[in-house]
Length: 349
Image (cartoon, rainbow, N blue to C red; front, side):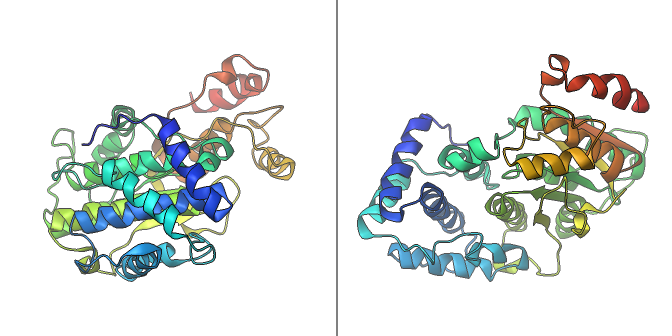
Protein backbone atom coordinates (compact mmCIF):
# COMPACT_ATOMS: atom_id res chain seq x y z
CA UNK A 1 0.00 0.00 0.00
CA UNK A 2 1.18 3.51 -0.76
CA UNK A 3 2.65 5.25 2.28
CA UNK A 4 1.22 8.73 2.62
CA UNK A 5 3.85 11.30 3.52
CA UNK A 6 1.95 14.50 2.76
CA UNK A 7 0.70 16.61 5.62
CA UNK A 8 -3.01 17.52 5.92
CA UNK A 9 -1.97 21.06 5.04
CA UNK A 10 -1.06 19.94 1.50
CA UNK A 11 -4.62 18.70 0.93
CA UNK A 12 -6.07 21.84 2.51
CA UNK A 13 -3.96 23.96 0.17
CA UNK A 14 -5.27 22.11 -2.90
CA UNK A 15 -8.86 22.36 -1.66
CA UNK A 16 -8.44 26.11 -1.10
CA UNK A 17 -7.04 26.51 -4.62
CA UNK A 18 -9.95 24.70 -6.24
CA UNK A 19 -12.47 26.42 -3.96
CA UNK A 20 -11.49 29.77 -5.45
CA UNK A 21 -12.98 28.41 -8.67
CA UNK A 22 -16.02 26.60 -7.27
CA UNK A 23 -16.80 29.09 -4.50
CA UNK A 24 -17.40 26.28 -2.02
CA UNK A 25 -14.87 24.10 -0.18
CA UNK A 26 -17.07 21.00 -0.07
CA UNK A 27 -17.65 21.09 -3.82
CA UNK A 28 -13.92 21.61 -4.33
CA UNK A 29 -13.14 18.59 -2.17
CA UNK A 30 -15.63 16.48 -4.14
CA UNK A 31 -14.14 17.51 -7.49
CA UNK A 32 -10.68 16.61 -6.23
CA UNK A 33 -11.70 13.30 -4.73
CA UNK A 34 -13.89 12.24 -7.65
CA UNK A 35 -10.88 12.76 -9.90
CA UNK A 36 -8.86 10.41 -7.68
CA UNK A 37 -11.66 7.82 -7.71
CA UNK A 38 -11.88 7.86 -11.52
CA UNK A 39 -8.10 7.48 -11.74
CA UNK A 40 -8.26 4.56 -9.30
CA UNK A 41 -10.80 2.78 -11.50
CA UNK A 42 -8.83 3.34 -14.69
CA UNK A 43 -5.37 2.66 -13.30
CA UNK A 44 -6.50 -0.64 -11.76
CA UNK A 45 -8.32 -1.68 -14.97
CA UNK A 46 -11.68 -1.56 -13.22
CA UNK A 47 -13.31 1.00 -15.53
CA UNK A 48 -15.30 -0.41 -18.44
CA UNK A 49 -13.16 1.42 -21.03
CA UNK A 50 -9.47 2.21 -21.33
CA UNK A 51 -9.93 5.78 -22.49
CA UNK A 52 -9.94 8.68 -20.01
CA UNK A 53 -11.64 11.70 -21.57
CA UNK A 54 -9.65 14.88 -20.84
CA UNK A 55 -10.69 17.83 -18.71
CA UNK A 56 -13.48 18.36 -16.19
CA UNK A 57 -16.07 17.27 -18.74
CA UNK A 58 -14.13 14.05 -19.21
CA UNK A 59 -14.30 13.36 -15.48
CA UNK A 60 -18.07 13.78 -15.54
CA UNK A 61 -18.29 11.28 -18.41
CA UNK A 62 -16.07 8.86 -16.49
CA UNK A 63 -18.31 9.13 -13.42
CA UNK A 64 -21.40 8.52 -15.55
CA UNK A 65 -19.71 5.47 -17.06
CA UNK A 66 -18.82 4.12 -13.61
CA UNK A 67 -22.35 4.80 -12.35
CA UNK A 68 -23.71 2.59 -15.13
CA UNK A 69 -21.48 -0.35 -14.14
CA UNK A 70 -23.61 -1.49 -11.21
CA UNK A 71 -26.78 -0.21 -9.49
CA UNK A 72 -24.81 0.42 -6.29
CA UNK A 73 -22.62 2.95 -8.14
CA UNK A 74 -25.56 5.07 -9.37
CA UNK A 75 -24.86 7.78 -6.72
CA UNK A 76 -21.62 8.65 -8.56
CA UNK A 77 -23.76 10.32 -11.24
CA UNK A 78 -26.33 11.79 -8.84
CA UNK A 79 -25.99 15.62 -8.58
CA UNK A 80 -27.42 15.51 -5.05
CA UNK A 81 -24.46 13.34 -4.02
CA UNK A 82 -21.82 14.87 -6.29
CA UNK A 83 -22.92 18.40 -7.27
CA UNK A 84 -20.22 18.65 -9.93
CA UNK A 85 -22.56 19.05 -12.87
CA UNK A 86 -24.09 22.12 -11.22
CA UNK A 87 -20.76 23.79 -10.36
CA UNK A 88 -18.43 23.46 -13.37
CA UNK A 89 -14.70 23.62 -12.94
CA UNK A 90 -12.31 25.95 -14.74
CA UNK A 91 -9.17 25.00 -16.62
CA UNK A 92 -6.69 26.28 -14.01
CA UNK A 93 -8.38 24.46 -11.13
CA UNK A 94 -8.50 21.25 -13.15
CA UNK A 95 -4.82 21.57 -13.97
CA UNK A 96 -4.05 21.88 -10.24
CA UNK A 97 -6.01 18.69 -9.52
CA UNK A 98 -4.31 16.76 -12.32
CA UNK A 99 -0.86 17.89 -11.25
CA UNK A 100 -1.55 16.93 -7.62
CA UNK A 101 -2.70 13.39 -8.43
CA UNK A 102 0.11 12.96 -10.95
CA UNK A 103 2.59 13.62 -8.15
CA UNK A 104 0.69 12.00 -5.26
CA UNK A 105 -1.60 9.23 -6.57
CA UNK A 106 -4.22 7.89 -4.14
CA UNK A 107 -3.46 4.32 -5.16
CA UNK A 108 -2.45 1.09 -3.48
CA UNK A 109 0.07 -1.38 -4.76
CA UNK A 110 -0.96 -3.73 -7.55
CA UNK A 111 -1.90 -6.46 -5.06
CA UNK A 112 -4.28 -4.23 -3.08
CA UNK A 113 -7.12 -2.64 -5.01
CA UNK A 114 -9.68 -2.01 -2.28
CA UNK A 115 -9.40 1.79 -2.19
CA UNK A 116 -7.86 2.15 1.25
CA UNK A 117 -5.94 5.26 0.21
CA UNK A 118 -9.10 6.71 -1.33
CA UNK A 119 -10.83 6.41 2.04
CA UNK A 120 -8.08 8.23 3.87
CA UNK A 121 -7.84 10.90 1.17
CA UNK A 122 -11.51 11.89 1.54
CA UNK A 123 -10.97 12.58 5.23
CA UNK A 124 -7.92 14.71 4.41
CA UNK A 125 -9.73 16.70 1.71
CA UNK A 126 -13.14 17.31 3.25
CA UNK A 127 -13.01 19.75 6.12
CA UNK A 128 -16.80 19.53 6.37
CA UNK A 129 -16.67 15.76 6.87
CA UNK A 130 -13.88 16.02 9.44
CA UNK A 131 -15.31 18.85 11.51
CA UNK A 132 -19.02 18.70 10.77
CA UNK A 133 -19.52 14.94 11.00
CA UNK A 134 -16.31 13.93 12.82
CA UNK A 135 -15.21 11.63 10.01
CA UNK A 136 -12.13 9.77 11.25
CA UNK A 137 -10.94 6.65 9.48
CA UNK A 138 -10.41 3.52 11.56
CA UNK A 139 -6.80 2.30 11.51
CA UNK A 140 -6.55 -1.16 9.89
CA UNK A 141 -5.31 -2.91 13.02
CA UNK A 142 -8.23 -1.47 15.01
CA UNK A 143 -10.69 -2.61 12.33
CA UNK A 144 -9.23 -6.12 12.48
CA UNK A 145 -9.47 -6.14 16.29
CA UNK A 146 -13.11 -5.04 16.24
CA UNK A 147 -13.96 -7.73 13.70
CA UNK A 148 -12.15 -10.42 15.67
CA UNK A 149 -14.35 -9.49 18.62
CA UNK A 150 -17.59 -9.51 16.63
CA UNK A 151 -17.74 -10.89 13.09
CA UNK A 152 -15.35 -13.76 13.74
CA UNK A 153 -17.29 -15.22 16.71
CA UNK A 154 -20.55 -14.52 14.87
CA UNK A 155 -19.34 -16.68 11.98
CA UNK A 156 -18.45 -19.41 14.48
CA UNK A 157 -21.89 -19.16 16.09
CA UNK A 158 -24.15 -18.91 13.03
CA UNK A 159 -21.92 -20.17 10.23
CA UNK A 160 -20.08 -18.07 7.64
CA UNK A 161 -22.68 -18.72 4.96
CA UNK A 162 -25.48 -17.05 6.93
CA UNK A 163 -23.84 -14.35 9.02
CA UNK A 164 -24.69 -10.67 8.54
CA UNK A 165 -22.80 -7.66 9.91
CA UNK A 166 -23.38 -3.90 9.89
CA UNK A 167 -21.31 -0.80 10.45
CA UNK A 168 -23.95 1.90 11.08
CA UNK A 169 -21.36 4.70 10.87
CA UNK A 170 -19.24 3.29 8.05
CA UNK A 171 -17.60 6.50 6.79
CA UNK A 172 -15.61 5.61 3.68
CA UNK A 173 -15.71 1.90 4.46
CA UNK A 174 -12.51 0.81 6.23
CA UNK A 175 -14.37 -1.58 8.56
CA UNK A 176 -16.86 -2.70 5.91
CA UNK A 177 -14.11 -3.60 3.42
CA UNK A 178 -12.14 -5.46 6.12
CA UNK A 179 -15.33 -7.35 7.00
CA UNK A 180 -15.82 -8.23 3.33
CA UNK A 181 -12.38 -9.83 3.20
CA UNK A 182 -13.00 -11.74 6.45
CA UNK A 183 -16.41 -12.97 5.27
CA UNK A 184 -14.98 -14.08 1.93
CA UNK A 185 -12.21 -16.15 3.54
CA UNK A 186 -13.47 -17.05 7.03
CA UNK A 187 -10.95 -18.05 9.70
CA UNK A 188 -10.47 -21.82 9.69
CA UNK A 189 -10.65 -22.29 13.46
CA UNK A 190 -13.80 -22.45 15.56
CA UNK A 191 -16.37 -24.96 16.59
CA UNK A 192 -18.39 -24.65 13.35
CA UNK A 193 -15.92 -25.23 10.51
CA UNK A 194 -18.74 -25.63 7.99
CA UNK A 195 -17.54 -25.80 4.37
CA UNK A 196 -18.04 -22.60 2.41
CA UNK A 197 -17.96 -21.87 -1.29
CA UNK A 198 -14.94 -20.31 -2.96
CA UNK A 199 -14.44 -18.27 -6.12
CA UNK A 200 -17.34 -16.11 -7.34
CA UNK A 201 -19.72 -17.65 -4.81
CA UNK A 202 -17.45 -16.50 -1.97
CA UNK A 203 -17.40 -12.95 -3.33
CA UNK A 204 -21.18 -12.90 -3.66
CA UNK A 205 -21.55 -14.30 -0.14
CA UNK A 206 -19.20 -11.70 1.32
CA UNK A 207 -21.05 -8.84 -0.38
CA UNK A 208 -24.33 -10.14 1.01
CA UNK A 209 -22.86 -10.42 4.51
CA UNK A 210 -21.66 -6.82 4.82
CA UNK A 211 -23.80 -3.72 5.38
CA UNK A 212 -22.67 -0.11 5.71
CA UNK A 213 -24.60 3.03 6.57
CA UNK A 214 -23.49 6.65 6.77
CA UNK A 215 -25.00 10.10 6.97
CA UNK A 216 -22.58 11.35 4.30
CA UNK A 217 -23.98 10.26 0.92
CA UNK A 218 -20.63 10.53 -0.86
CA UNK A 219 -18.83 8.53 1.85
CA UNK A 220 -21.48 5.83 1.47
CA UNK A 221 -21.03 5.85 -2.32
CA UNK A 222 -17.27 5.52 -1.81
CA UNK A 223 -17.84 2.51 0.47
CA UNK A 224 -19.98 0.87 -2.22
CA UNK A 225 -17.30 1.57 -4.82
CA UNK A 226 -14.60 0.05 -2.61
CA UNK A 227 -16.62 -3.13 -2.03
CA UNK A 228 -17.25 -3.49 -5.75
CA UNK A 229 -13.64 -2.66 -6.63
CA UNK A 230 -12.51 -5.39 -4.24
CA UNK A 231 -14.97 -7.83 -5.78
CA UNK A 232 -14.00 -7.01 -9.37
CA UNK A 233 -10.31 -7.28 -8.57
CA UNK A 234 -10.72 -10.70 -6.95
CA UNK A 235 -12.79 -11.91 -9.91
CA UNK A 236 -10.30 -10.45 -12.39
CA UNK A 237 -12.95 -8.42 -14.22
CA UNK A 238 -13.95 -4.79 -14.69
CA UNK A 239 -16.70 -3.24 -12.59
CA UNK A 240 -19.35 -3.65 -15.29
CA UNK A 241 -18.79 -7.43 -15.23
CA UNK A 242 -19.76 -7.80 -11.56
CA UNK A 243 -23.35 -9.10 -11.75
CA UNK A 244 -25.88 -6.34 -11.21
CA UNK A 245 -27.98 -8.80 -9.20
CA UNK A 246 -25.28 -9.13 -6.53
CA UNK A 247 -26.24 -7.00 -3.53
CA UNK A 248 -24.13 -4.15 -2.22
CA UNK A 249 -25.77 -3.31 1.09
CA UNK A 250 -24.68 0.30 1.53
CA UNK A 251 -26.95 3.29 1.94
CA UNK A 252 -26.89 6.92 3.01
CA UNK A 253 -29.13 7.39 6.03
CA UNK A 254 -29.20 8.63 9.60
CA UNK A 255 -28.70 5.33 11.42
CA UNK A 256 -29.78 6.77 14.75
CA UNK A 257 -33.10 8.25 13.62
CA UNK A 258 -34.15 6.63 10.32
CA UNK A 259 -36.62 3.81 10.86
CA UNK A 260 -37.75 3.54 7.22
CA UNK A 261 -34.42 2.35 5.77
CA UNK A 262 -34.73 -1.42 5.18
CA UNK A 263 -31.06 -2.02 5.99
CA UNK A 264 -31.71 -0.74 9.53
CA UNK A 265 -34.30 -3.42 10.30
CA UNK A 266 -34.48 -4.51 13.93
CA UNK A 267 -32.64 -7.66 14.93
CA UNK A 268 -31.12 -8.21 11.48
CA UNK A 269 -27.42 -8.53 12.30
CA UNK A 270 -25.28 -11.15 13.99
CA UNK A 271 -22.39 -8.68 14.31
CA UNK A 272 -22.54 -4.90 14.78
CA UNK A 273 -19.28 -2.98 14.53
CA UNK A 274 -18.67 0.76 14.64
CA UNK A 275 -16.25 3.61 15.16
CA UNK A 276 -18.96 6.27 15.48
CA UNK A 277 -18.53 10.02 15.81
CA UNK A 278 -17.89 11.19 19.36
CA UNK A 279 -19.34 14.68 18.93
CA UNK A 280 -22.67 16.10 20.11
CA UNK A 281 -24.97 17.10 17.22
CA UNK A 282 -24.60 20.79 16.43
CA UNK A 283 -28.20 21.15 15.20
CA UNK A 284 -30.42 21.65 18.29
CA UNK A 285 -33.37 19.94 16.60
CA UNK A 286 -31.32 16.83 15.80
CA UNK A 287 -29.82 16.90 19.28
CA UNK A 288 -33.31 16.81 20.81
CA UNK A 289 -34.50 14.09 18.43
CA UNK A 290 -31.61 11.86 19.46
CA UNK A 291 -32.34 12.59 23.13
CA UNK A 292 -35.95 11.56 22.62
CA UNK A 293 -34.99 8.37 20.77
CA UNK A 294 -32.29 7.29 23.26
CA UNK A 295 -33.32 8.73 26.63
CA UNK A 296 -31.23 6.32 28.70
CA UNK A 297 -27.95 7.36 27.15
CA UNK A 298 -28.46 10.75 25.46
CA UNK A 299 -28.61 13.03 28.46
CA UNK A 300 -27.00 16.41 28.98
CA UNK A 301 -24.19 17.25 26.55
CA UNK A 302 -23.92 13.64 25.42
CA UNK A 303 -21.49 12.08 22.98
CA UNK A 304 -22.99 10.35 19.93
CA UNK A 305 -20.90 7.32 20.83
CA UNK A 306 -23.50 6.36 23.45
CA UNK A 307 -26.62 6.41 21.21
CA UNK A 308 -24.70 4.30 18.68
CA UNK A 309 -23.99 1.76 21.42
CA UNK A 310 -27.69 1.65 22.25
CA UNK A 311 -28.64 1.42 18.57
CA UNK A 312 -26.47 -1.66 18.07
CA UNK A 313 -27.27 -3.41 21.34
CA UNK A 314 -31.01 -2.73 21.50
CA UNK A 315 -32.09 -2.44 17.86
CA UNK A 316 -29.73 -3.87 15.23
CA UNK A 317 -28.26 -6.98 16.86
CA UNK A 318 -30.00 -10.35 16.92
CA UNK A 319 -30.49 -11.82 20.41
CA UNK A 320 -27.08 -13.02 21.49
CA UNK A 321 -25.36 -11.09 18.70
CA UNK A 322 -21.87 -9.62 18.98
CA UNK A 323 -21.24 -5.89 19.26
CA UNK A 324 -17.84 -4.19 19.11
CA UNK A 325 -17.22 -0.47 19.16
CA UNK A 326 -14.24 1.86 19.25
CA UNK A 327 -15.52 4.53 21.58
CA UNK A 328 -14.67 7.71 23.44
CA UNK A 329 -13.91 7.63 27.16
CA UNK A 330 -15.69 10.94 27.78
CA UNK A 331 -18.62 9.11 29.38
CA UNK A 332 -16.29 8.16 32.26
CA UNK A 333 -15.39 11.78 32.97
CA UNK A 334 -18.56 13.77 32.32
CA UNK A 335 -22.02 13.85 33.83
CA UNK A 336 -23.85 12.46 30.80
CA UNK A 337 -22.15 9.08 31.35
CA UNK A 338 -23.64 8.47 34.79
CA UNK A 339 -26.94 7.00 33.63
CA UNK A 340 -25.13 5.06 30.88
CA UNK A 341 -22.88 3.35 33.45
CA UNK A 342 -25.35 2.85 36.29
CA UNK A 343 -28.54 2.00 34.38
CA UNK A 344 -27.87 1.13 30.72
CA UNK A 345 -24.76 -1.04 30.70
CA UNK A 346 -25.78 -3.28 33.65
CA UNK A 347 -28.69 -4.55 31.55
CA UNK A 348 -26.19 -6.27 29.24
CA UNK A 349 -23.81 -7.60 31.89
